[in-house]
Length: 200
Image 1 (spheres, rainbow, N blue to C red):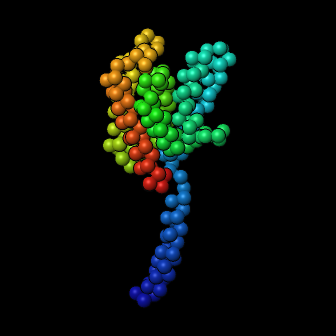
Image 2: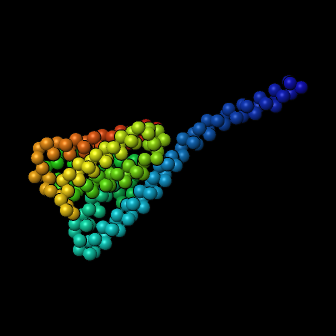
Image 3: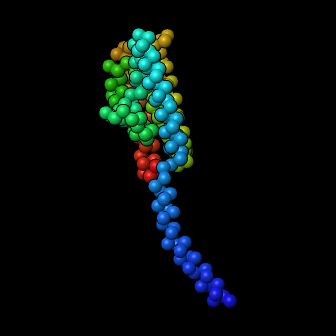
């Protein structure tokens, strides 16, 4: 009887072992569901921003249209010449570049544009947040802290509905703003690398 059991179980085990790589390969080829849902949220955000920008242009509100356009700047950088909405992982990487560039140009860049870039970067990060949370909760917390710190730094220079001219900031204020921008940019780049390395 045990010999018969071996003849029955052994072929089943061999068949399962042979098909196991197919299951692994299939699981690896499927996109991360957390990034898929993030992509859907990000697509909705981009559509809404584009519609708002068109409405502002139609109404003749150049400043309002500019705010929406600059919120989409990380997506525009990521998309290049493509008309498709880029993946949030690409946008997060592009957001890091945009914020880093803003950090190097704290004198001539308009703080309203910096605030809009920060808002657009925050939405791109929100689209990858769940996938990153599953891999590195500490990095998510660190990005949230840097994002809050950058917003606080920008709020220090707010005057009414706008901002003071960036060119009027003291050297210490420019350095503090540049450091806040670079700190967030570096962590966004790190997040994109971590998700890319994990095959997401």
